[in-house]
Image (tube, rainbow, N blue to C red; front, top):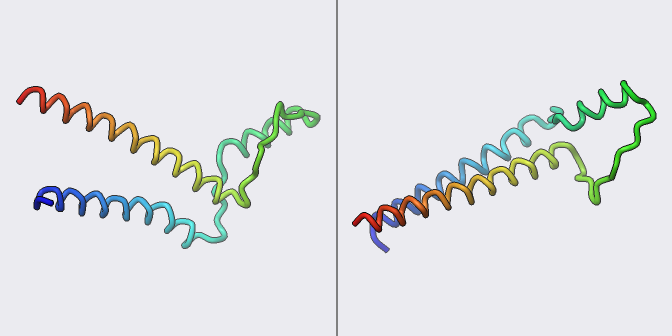
Length: 100
């Protein structure tokens, strides 16, 4: 493996560690905090407006806590942005290769 490839791999690993730390640190340091999302707030408002409202459908599986739900949402966003950024980088590299 060339020095440039090793440098790039170490940068990617470092960035991955930072992302994981950004996900886990708030969960570990703010144990009693409530990480409420817009879904819960919207449900409260709907219940105030129409107390007899019945949801159209229910979730197949409910995460054990709101923090876990937020974690899954964040991971989904991170994975999605990773795919998009990878694809854009792939297109950029292919264009650069064609120019050479």
